[in-house]
Amino acid sequence: METNYFTKLNQINVSEHIEKKGAFSYLSWPFAVAQLRQADPTATWEVRRFDGMPYQKTEAGHFVEVAVTVQSVTLSQIHPVLDARNQPILEPSSFDINTSIQRCLVKAIALHGLGLYIYAGEDLPECDKAPQEPAGAPKAPVTTHPTASLVTAAQVRFIESLIKETGEDLAKVLAYFNVESLSQLTKLQASRAITSLQKNREAA
Image (cartoon, rainbow, N blue to C red; front, side, top):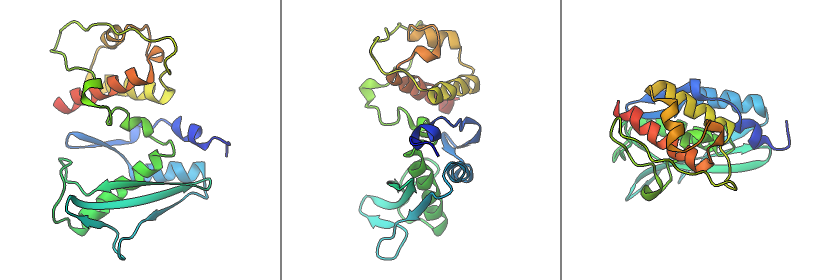
């Protein structure tokens, strides 16, 4: 395996394996596990226990935690137990707990690079997110800073898949960010584009 395993995992295109449930998108956990094991057969994961239980009950809701180890690097992810609307479940069933563990596993794997671009933009503060424009409204161009960190190939592939899925006009997206191709976007601009396109998809 290459020294920089993160780069190898981050370059894998997972777009065709994204499942949509309601208004939200998730990466198939069997695919994530298969890709992880193909990249590193020694990779392992652990569902953390709380007093012997695979979840922790708090006043804010129930939480699960999964730790994934790749090339001796262990990263863990905590995930709340949510319903189909991404709202906390006050009294989750065993199925709800298991579903959250699977989602948590996928996000823990993403910390190592696989499918990480799916979550780009979800942690941006509201003031940094792309504004929602009325249909057909002209979009103001945004100048790309020459020293800004450029978009990754994985982000470009994900944006292309979102444009295809939403029926958005690529030319309008490029004009909005004042670039000639998606590869000229900065990582922040890419995150904004992904967030906006995902909202358009959810509203469809």
